[in-house]
Structure formats: C-alpha cells, structure tokens
Image (tube, rainbow, N blue to C red; front, side):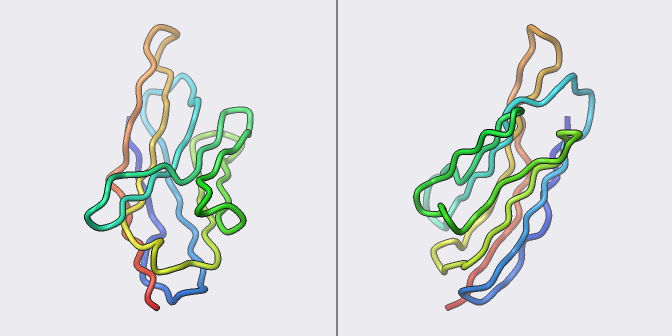
Length: 119
C-alpha cells in the first residue's frame, strides 16, 4: 500500500492551497482517511479526518477554514485549506486506515508535503 501526497507549497497568509493524497496498492477497502500537521519542532497533530461514510472531524484550529473530502472510489482524499495562517506552516501527512482482509486492518502514512505560509 502506497500513499502519495501533493499540493504543498509556499503561500502568503490569507491564501489557499489544496492538498491531495492518493492511496494505491492491494486494498480491500479504506476506512478512515486523516490529514495530520507537524509544525517545526512540534509533534504531529490531527487536522481533519473523514470516514468511509463521509463523516468529518476537524481540529478546532482549522474549523471553518479547512475542508476534507474523499472521492467516490475512496482512493483519494483532499484537504482544501483557505485563509491560511503562518501557524499552518509545516509538513502535512496523509494517513489511511486500510482493510487488507477482514482480519487485517493497518494504518499507512504518506511521506508528507511541505506547506509554508508567509506573513
């Protein structure tokens, strides 16, 4: 199973970016897809997650600014980031809860994509 993030970059405060993450490999199904943020010198923190049924959860710091979504085939997850702030700077990681068989459920990580927000 392989996860690949894209869409990071340098943006001014108040700007927008859209991150994408593709999930590929031998997959029966994907349960939860989650975006995490790791700011410089800090621990990785949950930003947003979306269940297979479409239910979403957001960190308080991004509510009203970020939107997570997944495609109908459930192999892509997106993070639309608006009204970006310098505090949003860091590496964004995609995490997928993947069902290989009914008895084998694993979490996989992407390599991360860098987001830098200038003030």
